[in-house]
Image (cartoon, rainbow, N blue to C red; front, side, top):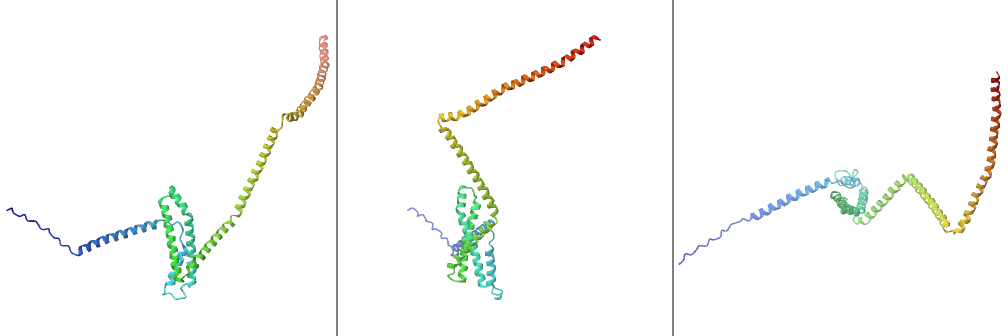
Length: 279
């Protein structure tokens, strides 16, 4: 009989219960470290982005007042009143509404410019970050509004919107007051230009009408108009012919006078010559 081949038994590797836990722990620590570093870098890049708007002084003022309002160490006299806090929150909401409306108005312009390639990625990201920041600002204002009085949001935002519109109208009116003289000068300039253009148009129309009349008149009427002109020219020619013989007579008389004068001078010279010969 053939010898039976011994089949090697597989080795069983014993793994402790802690090895998968350690593996999971290592993976989680690497993932957490990566997420922390990624967030730090992203925050650093976001802080470097310059905002589209200037600093929001109304929000800064509200935060300072709120820090004093929450501080229990301060006495009640030094703490700001609840009405002051509500007024500061209202001013903060007005500024947030104004900025959000400006961003919504300019959103299609930014999109078109970005699609056409006239704006880079940095400016478009700047716009997106500002829009997100304004959304978070409005959400925070809603939460703050609910802390003072529940259900106050329904009347809070309409009043803030009315204040925003009223301030915008005031700014425009104040800007128009300083531009009265400039606008009046522009008005006078354009009125004078329009009057000059109207006068030129009238003159052109008159000239065109006259040319049309001349072209529309038949040849007989044109000959009748030309006959008196020809008669005047012939009369002037006859006057010149009548004047010419008189002018010739005057010239002949002048020539005769010159000849007589020359004859009267010549005999004296001859007499002087004869006396010399006698001597």
